[in-house]
Image (cartoon, rainbow, N blue to C red; front, side, top):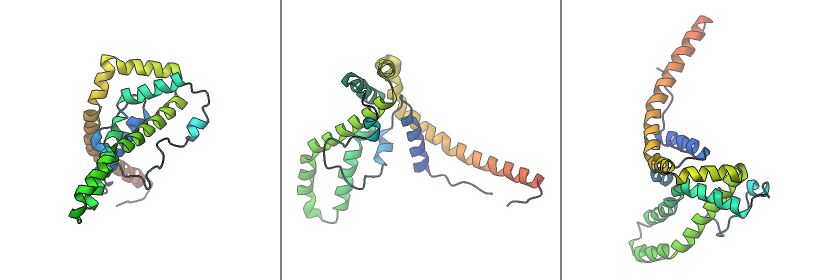
Amino acid sequence: MFRLPIRPRALRAAVALTLLAAPAASVSPALAQKAAPPKAAPQAATPAPTPAANTAPSITPSHLALAREVMLGSGIARSFDSIIPAFSEQIRQNAVTRPELTKDLDEVLNGLQPEMELQKQAMITTAARIYAARLTEAELADIAAFFRSPAGKRYVETQPQVLDGIVQAMQGWTQEVSEYVMVRVRAEMAKRGHQMQ
């Protein structure tokens, strides 16, 4: 029987992107660790303005501050927390064949922590600008108020487990739906005089 391939990693990424698209979403640290590293690391701590930032000149400091609060309050920013350590671990693994580098490499990576923190903060600022370009200050104030509430805090706290549960559920659902669709297509094509394998 025909089956669509199920790739848990791709499925997990799709679910995460869907949750990230909503203003009240977060990504589990496990997912962030699976993110592919960028081709080249940014050279400056402050990113170049994004097109969204350029098209929204009316973003005030208070508007941006609320957007940043939503980013941090929603838990989305914690997905950035595991990316830098994942890069460091990847560098360490690449150097495993040269044990003489271990001590110096650890010192270098530890010494770069403040710069890496600046890189993370720059990404948070970029993400906040994206939010501010798409949501009004009043909307962001309402969202921030939700994340400050007990329900909002609980929502964020449960997101990693919710994401894991959704991914697990979608794996079975994807298989069932792929089989159902194929059966239905075969039946409809048979009515038209076509036989499909």
